[in-house]
Structure formats: C-alpha cells, structure tokens
Image (cartoon, rainbow, N blue to C red; front, top):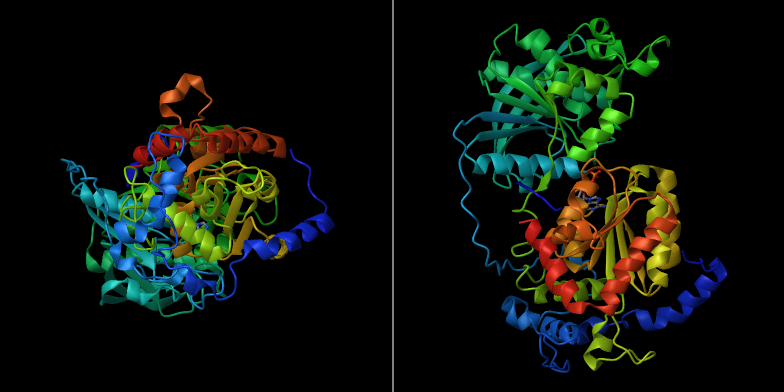
Length: 600
Ligand code: ADP
C-alpha cells in the first residue's frame, strides 16, 4: 500500500417528477433487443478526427473510445454493448486481461530491520470485505511484504468466503481453543489470497457461520473474543512468535488483554502489539461476564484506567469497551489519518483515554492497494486505461451508461451538438459507492441525487444499508428514479461493479459527516474520477480544493464544509460548471492527471 498524499435547488413535486420520468423514459432506455445492434466496433459510428489541443478534445476522446475495442483491447472485437435487459449483468461478465500500463513500478526499497508481522482481523479484501478495513489490511500486508517483511493475515474462516478465491488452501493445525468453560476443536488452514499468506481459523461451533461476514445468528461479540484467543492459542501451539501482532478495530481488541495477562505469562514472549482504529464509532460494548468467557476475569478490567466504558460508570451493570481495553493494553495505537487523530483527541468519550495514551497514539494516513486498484490492469474492466491513456476511461463510461440504460452522450457528441440547445452536451457521471449508514451523510446523498439530476448530470449510487429503515428509504428512491434518464440507485454490494463505476465516473461523491480516512475518494482519483468531499477526517487530508489558491499545486477536487444541502450544492455547482464549461483541457489533462498521479 502506498501512502496517498493527495489525496439549492427547488425539488420538483412527486407528481411532476413522475410525469417527467414518464416523458423521459422512452428516450432514455435502450430499445428492446438493442444489444445486438450495439456492436463495439460498429462501422456506423463515425470517428471524427480532431486536434487534441482544440476545444473538441471531448469529441476526440469520444471517437477514440468508440474505437477502443479495436485499438485498446482487440480481444473485445465483435463483443456487444451491454444492456439492462442482459441475462448476465454487465459487471458479472469476464473480461480478457490486458495491461496498457506504461508505468514501470519503482523498485521498492527493502527495510533494513525485517520483521514478522501478523495481522489479526475481521476483514480482508477481496474475500471478506465489508468496507475499508478489508482494503487496508490487504494493502498494508502487500506493502510490508514488498519491503521485505514476513507477513501473515489471520482471519476467521467465515462460511461465506468463496474458497475458489484462495490458492493452495491446506489444513495445517487442529487444536483446541477455550470458550465458556469448554475447549472447542478448531482448525487452522493456510492459503494465499491475492498473493498474501493467510491463516484461516475455523472453530467447530456455530461461530462465523452464515451468508455474510457480519450479522450471522451467533453472538458476534463472543465470537470475536473467542477468535482473539484462538489466534494466540494457535501461536502458542505452533510456536510461532512474530515480532508484531497487528490487531484492528474492537473485534480483535481483546487480544492485547489476553496477550499481556495470559499468553505472555506462558510461552509468547517476543511479540509486541499494535492496534489500528479504523472507526471510533464501534467500540465493542461488552459485559464483564462476556469477557470472562475467554478465560480472563472480566471484573478486573472494570476500572477507569483499564476497560470500563466511562459513560456507564454507576449504571447497573456497568459495561466494558473492548476498544478502550485495546488502547490501554497495546504498545502502539494508530488511527487512519492525521486529521482524524486530532478529531478523536478533541471529542468523543474515548478522548480522555486517548489523551492519557497520547505518547503511543499516531495518525498515519491510509493508502490504497495499488495492485488491486489499478485501472491499467483491473480484471473487472472491459478496457484498461491509465493517466497517459484515458481513452479507455471514456469507453468504460459508455459501457456503464449502456449497461444501466442511461443515455450515452456519444449520440449528441459525435454530432457535436445538443439537439435542444445547439451546444455540445457534456453529461458528467457522478458515482457514490458507500455503506448506507448515517456517518456517510445520507441526507446529503439523497439531496445530491436530486441536485445532480437538476444540474443535467447522471448519478449512480451503489450502496448497501445494514438498517432496514434506511434500505426502505433508498428502495423508494430507486423506485422513483431508476426508470428515469439520469439516476440509478443500486442497493447491493458488488466488488466488480464498484471497480467498473470508479472507472466510468467523472466525479466521485463522498459527503460524509465524519470520515476517519475514506478510501472511496482515493480509489476514485486512482481511476481518474474527481472527488467532491466534505472536509472532515481523512477527506481533509487527501482532497484539496481547486479554488484554494494557496494550495493550487495540490488541487485535485472540490471540498465543502457544512453538513447542510446548500454547502453540498455549492461544491457540486463548481464541479459541474468546471466540467461543462471547460476549461476542458484543464479537467481532462491537469485535474484527472493530478488525481491519477497522486495515487500511484
Ligand atoms: P468505510 O470503511 O467506512 O466503509 P471507506 O471509504 O474507507 O469506507 O471504504 C469503503 C470501501 O468499501 C471502498 O473500497 C468502497 O469501494 C467499498 N464499498 C462500499 N460500499 C460498497 C458496495 N455497496 N459495493 C461494493 N463496494 C463497496
């Protein structure tokens, strides 16, 4: 993983909206059976030769995108444009691998002091990913491997993990680990995921069974406390003594307590423990007797200087916080951006604990895994591209537009004129890929949907809501908008589609109320999508407003401060007006280039 140094409008009434949707529906959807006539190398699509330095740059790119199937990826020749009526959705198709990368990866310097690092984690991309935690674990592991360290990731063997994504899966140890008075037979497997060695811990009880990473019908808190002990037990049984055990989030925060108060007294002497806090909102609320199930005495942690949740002092019963225990018991505590570090020292109930442990608390900006997130080699893209060869990006945009039944600007652009205004049409595509939870600024996302439509853009939201009420709200919005010409709201989790959308996007929206680091804006930039973000946490550390003249050499996006709709409107207005009124050369050549290159 490379550190990324980057980086009000009136609402139409429902009745008017539905009427306008009905009017637009006909023209916006691909005609039934249209797929067959949209051959990628259709000779009917004229390629217009233009000067790349002229204001016709977009026309030029469009024309080149049309021929991209031939020029960029010959294997696509004769393929068919996707359509919403395809039996297999376009993001599930397999594309030929093809690398247009001209980047020669810089030789990574090896560290002189080499260590064995074991990550103990609840998530790992791509096999067990729910959000950024999974991405970061994989990226960090790969980065340390490339600098010469020995790295293992230890992960619960969730039933939902697709085994075909694991290479060389082998059972290596069967041992017992303690839970609630019993020793539970447990298997440890070794395998490789995306080039990274992984140990999978599989207890023989019901823990980690179910269709998803989280939300199975077992007690999640007890399952992760069990997992924390099972990891140490495995090290003890096999004699593995890493230099660093790196735990993440509350799920594995019982491990440092178990280490210092139990296993360090036994045979594990060498490791030191690091905790990364990816999001302070989740702190592992726990009753004393639940912690006791792993063999520790929960009562001894119920003090202010250990793990008691300060807000529950005097309540009956008081609660513990695994995350707080982790902060106290770890050798080093990291969080994922310098700004989030400051924010967490200033507010929130854990701030007093963090201040007490300030000398071992560091804010280090996350990066993205540039091997997985690389538009020049991305297996999920029909055509690859990079900062020097952006034609493929235009192609991906058209591919997604056609696949989702959104009007493709090429019809207007190839002619060079908008039928209505007599001007060239420029339709920016905004994407928002996120867990649909309050933190992500749900009211701003729903407002952006209306605003983007009014501004004449297109928007795709890809999101999953863990809360049924939120899911219903977005489902209603999807019913309202998805047949129309501008908006698509897709309520699901799809790794493949997320790659395709980042590649297709002109802009990526991240309007979070708070954001410890945020990866969506970095991934967007890596794929040449210009971010519009709220200035908070890691977003403030990675996105620099193009109108901030004190920092123009860093400019790579649009930033707003307030949590109100007007603030968002202001940023989107600026982004749209720059995109549409181009400054075309600036957007395509400088801004996108700035984004792509800062995330290499
Ligand atoms: P968080 O960790 O709070 O969810 P981040 O921005 O740090 O937010 O990371 C989110 C990661 O999860 C990104 O890789 C993003 O692309 C991915 N993601 C979020 N929602 C979805 C979804 N519905 N489908 C696919 N990927 C998603």
